[in-house]
Length: 413
Ligand SMILES: *Cc1c(COP(=O)(O)O)cnc(C)c1O
Image (cartoon, rainbow, N blue to C red; front, top):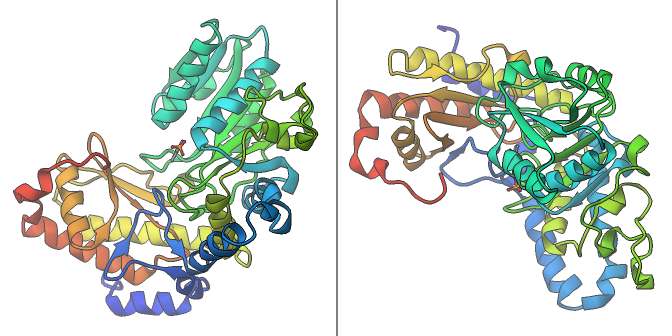
């Protein structure tokens, strides 16, 4: 511990191979932003790109931009950029819709491919929208299917011949714990089960190898570690071997083999494109495309290495400087099982997080008692971690969080 000091942090930042990436972001002034796992920061280039799209592509060129600016191929282009980050082929991923809707789509396709099997296995602690979408789809399909929500460490025990689909989130949103994608996929496929991975907290945060793990389907979020902006389009992956078999439930014209023939009958496009539905949100998708360029010259292994160093450092510092303050580590201590976030449980977590945010350290709170901190290696440095923990220490030791104003809840936490 004695070896840790502000000087040491500055030195680590100087030696950081990703240090120049930070300059590509418009970071909020006077704040330490540890919430890139909820909403990633704004890449500077995205500001002028969105301005150009609105001013010129829309304002001047109007309808001609579908061809001239190639708006029509945005979902495939952005999909190809994301594919590189998640171990997929360029034409196995498209950007579209929201994560919730994409999960509905691929789950529906997968269930259809598994007729005769009735169970969907997921985890009790999965992100709620994923579970809600499964429940809604089961209703929609007439209730012949059953969702079995199991404890996170019991997934392997529930893989049997009645299971149609296993649907899991790779990195858990609360704890940051992640699954061994390859091992679980293999175990499920050995029983004839199709596997859907939600990569919302993985894409852009750590190396993911969908094809290395022989994944069947995946979905994920555009506004977290991919920095696409609020409500950015999400993405979906369908393994090439399923391209002909996976039938889209939302058979919109953008997924038609020839949308501009205006044929009265639906014919699905070849490949992953059939999982597009309606007209893409061009402004949002252009923002995502520009933001993804930040990843063009970085290696996910470097991002991962720094992420592990930052999260290890944060845990070590909190446990030293805020020992006996009621914090309990709620993420795996072993970095090999932890994504790019650290969570602590604390009975007064809500007020503590409000006080932290008010003092310039932005993390978030997840009910009932989790304070959560995301570390985006592209723009968070070692000195940030050090300063964040000093501010947390001050808030705890001076009882700042006890002030009434930190106990008022807003709609979004
Ligand atoms: C963030 C997140 C989502 C978000 O879904 P939206 O449809 O974009 O609101 C879904 N699933 C997981 C696991 C997430 O972390």
